[in-house]
Image (cartoon, rainbow, N blue to C red; front, side, top):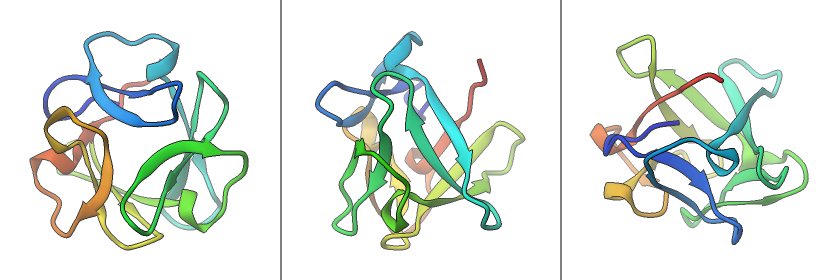
Amino acid sequence: MQAANLQYVSAEPSGNIIANRNAVNEWEKFELIPTGELYTYALKTKSNGKYVSFEPNGRVVADRTSIGAWEKFILYNGGDNRIYVLQALSNGRYISANGGRELTATSYVAGSWERFVIVYF
């Protein structure tokens, strides 16, 4: 995924998710997994095999071994076939790249920092 700062989203070894990479390697690869619910997905990191969790307090971290309610999000088309908006089911907030810092699930509105390009490999 690529954020508004044109940097790729990365799952760091600590589990933190941050949009600060200019190239795609293993840490920047995620598997988009349909959960069986309409427009609802989960993300699994390629680097450590963990699922990305959107905690109710807004923290986004890749440290879960299975898909539960906190690991699910709704995927919306952001007005272009490649641009998407993610809304966490845990708190109803949009996922934000926050100017290239760690991703959070704290935004009430889907602005430019809440839009991501999904790149397929």
